[in-house]
Image (cartoon, rainbow, N blue to C red):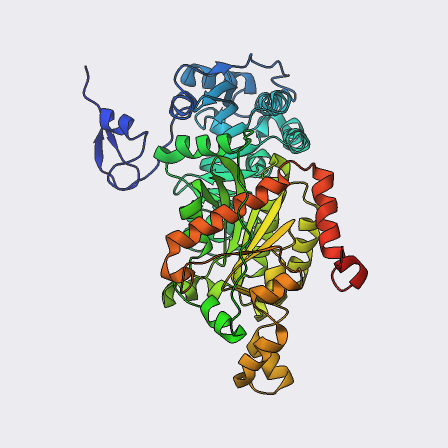
Length: 542
């Protein structure tokens, strides 16, 4: 057999073709993700032998009678001969981890993976099949944009595919987009970015206008790494960067999360917290060793996949969110994130989210509602970030919209205040059917220091303010602001995070056990009634 070597296009390393194939087209020296064919991609993602391609859709192949250097039909014929493909994408049914999916894969070799009538029809057919059969839709894109030779007919494919994805939303079926390099133009501005979850390969580029067009138009130098996967993650446009070797497992986890599961959860005995000084509780809630949302995700959930970004402006390190399984129950976890070390807490802005964090949380709550996933929120924040940039980007509106959205969710929602429950920044994630609080957590309209500074003109009066505000779990239970208290290990959750997680997990399972049998309208009504009663004596007594 001929010995073939491949030169990496980034680091110029010479790689034997067998080693290159075992690495799925990724350079083992520098990690550069080289293009792969549509056929290779199908083999990499689907269970062996499971792919059943769709029949080739009939379309008008040359609607304009287009001629540049050669007639358009000749370009099509040449592309077919060179690639062995009928068009720039292949699609069909298959399985991942034994679960049915519908898959569309684009191939950049075929006229730059351009979007014409044939590709638009294939994507639309795939989305309609996905909705009808309730099988998740996965698209893998690599495209230069809409096909110029088909003119306005190619342009119409953007709306056609967007409309098909709206049908997936109405049907409550999961869609996942895998972005390969490059994905630009009409594909980026339609189905590639409309998926529920957007995964991107390392280094892949995604954008509406290509960098050359942008530079020629605005006459400005573009920043390093512009439109690459890493840039897009930072700016909130994608959910996760996933190396090619991890794509199948990640997709399998997502697909399995959209399947129906009926777990058998047990009730737990109510825990009555001991009486203690409110300020002591505040200090315990701020212990740097207390488990964070990321810690709880790792300790109580299986197959947790962290998702990122608000799809508008950015990502917020103050919020950790994603899909995982709680003893078999798929759910959406969303929570404040502080970190433990000074470096981590600074990077996460001490758990004070920007508007992007709340908008990301809202995006994922809508996804949970679409897929029928219960929502678990973990609250631990001194409050929403009060800075200039947050105000410029609409902090108040982001908090308000989060509360309105949570009030309308048709899935069970459970909140646990695990540390600090500061003001609207906490409430934005706490409009739930069941609100629990850890034994050494606090919840209030303002921080004790803030209250003391306003009313007593001195932050040193914070202990006095904490007592006056009745921030501790026992008082909150008496006021029925919380429905139950989660026991903590002796000395606080920071002394034994694993035990704290086990206690929290048991309490959460018990709360969901009460809610899972309820219908969507019943959950909305129960949640509405829960918050309607506050401040009204007659309703509070019910």
